Amino acid sequence: MTKIIISIQYAGLTLPVVKNEAGEDCTPLKPISDLFGLRWRDQRQKVTGSAYMARFLGLSQRENDGLSAFQVGISPPVPAPELFIRLDRVAAFLMSINPDKVHAAGNVDGAKFLAEKHEEWADAVHDYEELGIAVNLNHARAQEAMRKQRAAFAQMIGVRNKTENKADRDAIGAVVKQMAGELGVSYQPDLL
Image 1 (tube, helix red, strand yellow):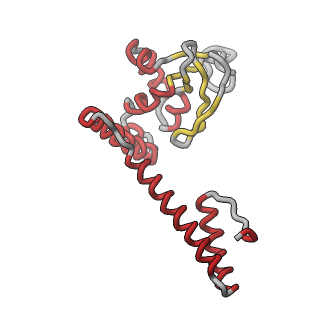
Image 2 (cartoon, rainbow, N blue to C red):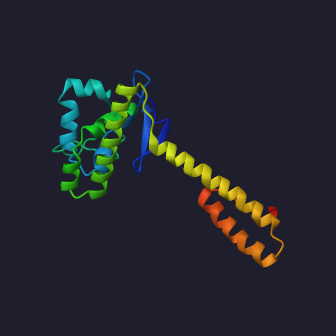
Image 3 (cartoon, one colour):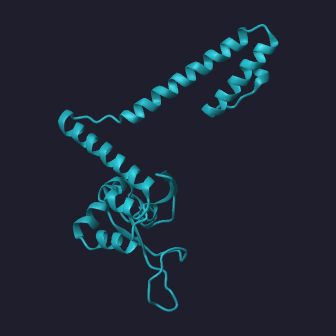
């Protein structure tokens, strides 16, 4: 594998992305396992103990940088190779995790997230098989909500600019400033 080239945000984690020997994007498996409070030894066995799982997930190893996993029972501790899976198979790995076990381990939020993702992905696969297409309605709803927020923001700027009373204009300007912050837009009141 080559050095880390990029990182992504996934379910609250920042995951490094590296290229494997075949040039595919891969990410380490242990942080994903840790996020859900799973026993790493069990997850490692699940993916390394099955030739199918290893092949399906695109499992590869890389020598550890010495900062995370260590081989147990060796003195002094020796960095263990890290396991990586293909980035496009992270969702498939998550489908192999039982939310009830995550919940039983005390990670209620993780279990809820996982159960919701399982349902969303199962619906997407069903739609793909039945209709030949799958649409992420959550993404479509988020895009529509953002479009409406931007339209309301633009409309509010127009109202502010047409308001003659300075006190009213300043009050509307405060609302515009708040809306700009919520949309992540730079706000410069002198330009309005």
